[in-house]
Image 1 (cartoon, rainbow, N blue to C red):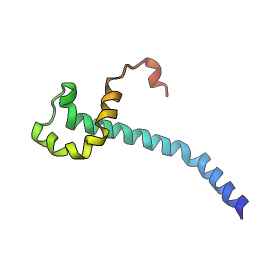
Image 2: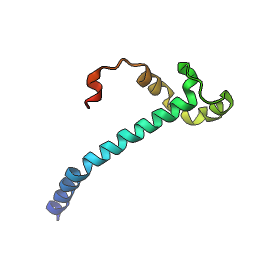
Image 3: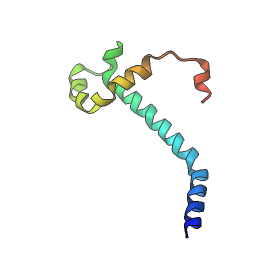
Image 4: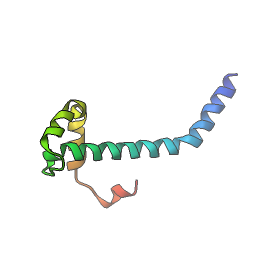
Length: 82
């Protein structure tokens, strides 16, 4: 029974791992875009009026520091390869 469970986990990892990592990358991109639209004022890109941005701050606050670090880091053409 243990062998079949381990084999099932291995097969599942081989088949679904690529899809799950792609889904997580897309989710991260969507989250970054959402924060850019709502909190773009921090980078000098005002898109939404400040009223709506301030209403969303409690929901976005835990991710702001990581988002700013991600948006302001230097990029190289090799970043597009991965």
